[in-house]
Image (cartoon, rainbow, N blue to C red; front, side, top):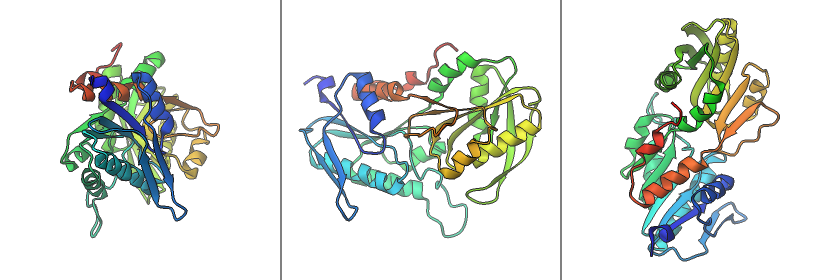
Length: 316
């Protein structure tokens, strides 16, 4: 049996359109599986084709409803293991619980590590993910992790928007390394917005480090849920004289508060990926596809090739 024939891709219910697009990109059919719920809410999974000895990839972002989608993924992995799959790779474009990666106050869990343990215990042999909230989460797994970046996809689009007065800005201290990487590739200046978080829903921007007056600003971040950090940063940047503000965010898991904040017009364009299903609701949103990036990673993992080449950026 050829390597290509051994490859099987299945999808949970969190982002089936992305899974279908990945399959089109690599030229394989999406595997047949039933993923549904019993009346009491329990998840039921049945893989409807033979996967004995196959190299199986299960595409599932753990986006809201997070716990439900996580259970779907765990049960699909267990079903594949019990169906004698040779290798199981969990393709998790957006890894939920990633922000709970340390004990930052007494008597709290490190839930990102717990989720890593659950995935391994369920039977995953490998993880393929993108733009984790913090790089060290890779070390929470006792199995190989292929950690992709959305930067090649973003930079391919941003190359059409090049500006002589571009400044790449991190909306908080934690994102300065990512912002510096973008600034280096785009040959742009770097800025930083210092922030103070009052609670999970409210963020205050304190000041800006760097020259932003009359400049076109690109905010970069790994994820946003309430858009509090982004809009607070955008407001401060505009008060400091920024000419325009765009935001490139790998994962947009927007709630109602985020839509209300983004409608204020502080951000001219929100650029994101289809790692989660996003309803624009009239916002100026550019959704870029990561299907080809993930598809190429799947093919390379299947044939035991290096995925390093996927970090190379065309045109730069």
